Image (cartoon, rainbow, N blue to C red; front, top):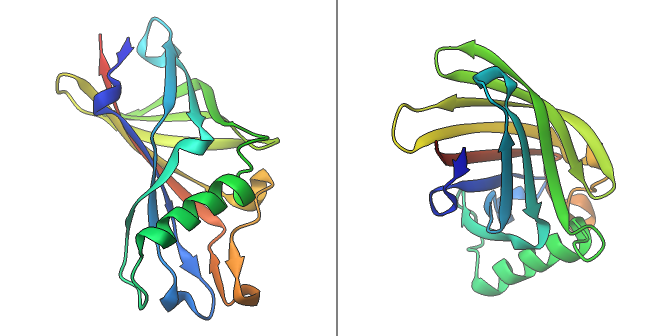
Length: 178
């Protein structure tokens, strides 16, 4: 199994909260550098390891409109806050998901139960995915997790009147060739 990286993507969705949330932004971030290792000989015996360069997370777009438009300066500031304050990428350069438990849930539908390692914390996550019958094979899915479960304090400003929700959603589309 070979990953086709130029047709694969991993995105992270974060959502605003707080009294002044109309001034904030729901954001979609893209992981621009990641490595995927897949091993196993049959459908239910696949093992997967995804390593994301945490400093490669970039703001891709806003998901909803805001009272305050997102400027290029704001985008750069958000990316810097993610790297320096939230993920501390100089100390914790990688985010890693690994799983060796793939379960069949129905036609073209699977679930990976595995471990997510962020900063200095490992936790269990469940990732649902579907496959397409196209060439290359696309594996698409999502998983949600709570930031505080991974020793991450969600971003907060103005004494908590503007903040990011604790829940984060990761979506992916991975192209595979056999």
